[in-house]
Image (cartoon, rainbow, N blue to C red; front, side, top):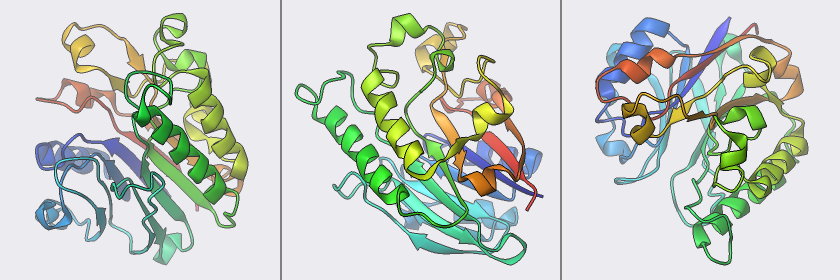
Length: 263
């Protein structure tokens, strides 16, 4: 069994203690982090080294964005795609070695897209859609067992948000974003593991705004995902979200997801 976790940590240096707590408690073999907000030279390598996560691929930048994959299993880094074509650090891909030989993990942080769901009025929204189109072009050529995971910044199903009617025109749940995400999924036939193991319409949120969190309201959205190519999806045995991290001191606005595979 191999367990893979993903978590938008919203600053790995600020929340290094929380990451260590999560790794000690859940013991995933691999953890994919998004929004690490630091360059590789300032990444808290020793925290992971001390916990046995001796294999790391860090694609960071100063103050914003950034992704990192840390692992107890050996891997080799494959690529760092710039699907936004602007130099931002939003992706790193690795291939597991050893007992999990051949499994590819693509760690991605899709842009949020700003506040206005119109590419003419909001350049960030257009960049998000273009990012997804480039991902779809890439996925069409995949020929290996692949897990793509991270913060997709899209809640695709009606039940993936606390109020579908209220959010249908809000960025992250608009029909144009969902259609773009569908094109990406269909390009490779990815299976949504979150809904394979927690079928719709069961509650399955992964993000809450800080404002509603402090109001103690369950106004969540499922923005974080783990999708697998068909052969790999068939080997997934469980999937869960670790919501208790919301109650930790100064939490991220996202929670971790964990999937186990019988390889």
